[in-house]
Each structure stands twice: as structure tokens, then as C-alpha cells.
Length: 329
Image 1: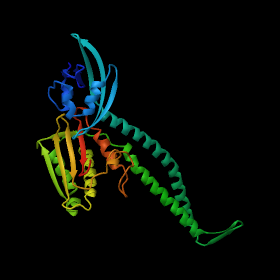
Image 2: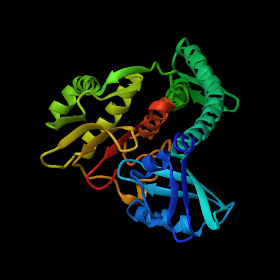
Image 3: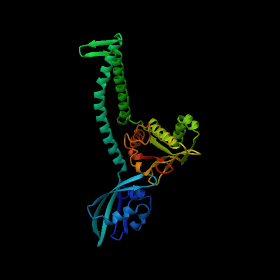
Image 4: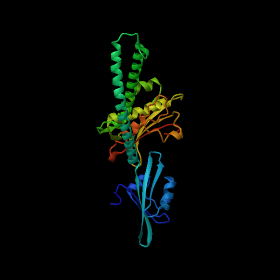
């Protein structure tokens, strides 16, 4: 039971000597059998320090940047005596996926409320402006005089048209952001990743060729497959490729590589790598926040949408999609 449970379990003595490590923990740490938890220093020195300091009943949350993915480890410790030896038993679970889902759910609820209220306010303004504009079109242009003063019908018509145009622009703007809350239910299929890459390459062919970008593929093994919605996963890769193409401005010998492999945790990893300018360290933690963008013409929903689609992956076939740049990811 201990070896087959999905949560990582690690039991050790006060000096760090390991009494037990189950399969889930080995897969999480990408290691085999270990004799002492200090062997995990290469994985995370912060984790080792925290494990040795944890007391019975204490909890901790540790963030680890692994080369394949970001991990958020939830740790819970308890102590017991076994054959006159003091043993600390620790459960370790990666909750990054759950945190991302909750974060996206919170953003969706906020966007849903905001767009609902904005649409309710703008729609009647746009409708009234359109009605008044149609009424004014039927009138003869010229100056009209009232007791309070005179006014020009052409000026009024121009003002109403401006209100209508801006209202319609705002409605379109709001409708764009509503896409974050209206993703279709995924139609999961088993997809050969080589075929997926070829399809995306064809869709991006004109742009890649036009900008003289060298696009290459690498799939290990070549028969690698994943379970996903073909249209949604294509949308993710196209968004990432577009970002990479834009990041290659002012770069010589531009190159983008699409690669896929199984990491040591058994997850399918798809990477979009380019040799562009990369991201500044201070913005790397913000790129998935809806509406945040580093581009002058950006909407700030592309990567948020990608992250949300990635979170739809089946639990038993979780995947990781990453965009890696020369100076960051």
C-alpha cells in the first residue's frame, strides 16, 4: 500500500538516515533508493533543511524550480517511535496543478463579474447612440435655434457617432476577455506528438518562412503520444510560437525548436525554445496573470489562455508545456 499510494512518503531518523521512501517520492525527486535525506541536496537544499527542522504536526509549502517544471510541495510531518528509534514520517505532494486551477478559477470569476457589469452598462449606451444617430440621419443638416442658444445638427451627429463607435469598441474589447471564461469542453483524443508538430508547422508556415526563422522538431521517442484536445493544444502551441517569433526581433540566425519528451516523473513535456531576447527576471512571475503584457500591442490573455488549456489535461496523463527563451522562460 505504501509503495502504490500516489502521495510521496519519506520516513527518516533525526540524523537523516532514511527508513522508508515510497515510489511516489522517488518519482517526485527523480531518484532511486537513498540512504540519507542529505542526498536530496542536489534536488533542493531548502527542502532538506525544512525536512530536518519540521516538528510533528507541522506543515510547510516549498517552491522548487526544477529544470522541467515548477513544483509547489505541500509537506506534512508526524513523529513516532519504532524499536526505540525516533522516526519522522513526512508526506510530500506536488500541488502546483491544483494551485494553478484555483488561481485561474479566481481570475475567471473576477473577469466574469467585471465583464457582466461592463456589458450591462455599455450595451444600452451603444443601443441609444445608434437609435439617436438613425434619427439624426433623417434630419436636414443645418443650424437650429432655441431659447437657450443655437446648435449645429452636424456636430450633434458627429458626437453621437463617436459615442456609438467607442461603445462598440468597448463591447468588442470586453468580449475578447470573456474568452478566458468560456473555454469549450475539451474533446480528448490520443495524439501522436510528431503529427501535432507537423500540423502546427503547416499552420505557421507562411509566418515562419516570411520571417526566415529556422523551425526544428525533436520528439523523444518518436512514437510519443499524449491525450489532449487537438484544437486546444494547437492553439497553445501557436500562441507560444507567435511569442517566440516576436521575441526574435533584432536577433541574428533566428531559431525556434519544438521538442517533446517524457521527464523522469513520467509526464509528457512539450517545450518551445528560441534564441531570442528572453524575459526579464522581474516579469517572469507575472506573465500568466490575465491582462499583464510586455508588448505595446498585447492583450495580456494569450499566456493566461495557454495556462488554462494546459490545466485541462486529464489527471492521469498530466502534461507540462513550457516556453523557454535564451535568458529565461
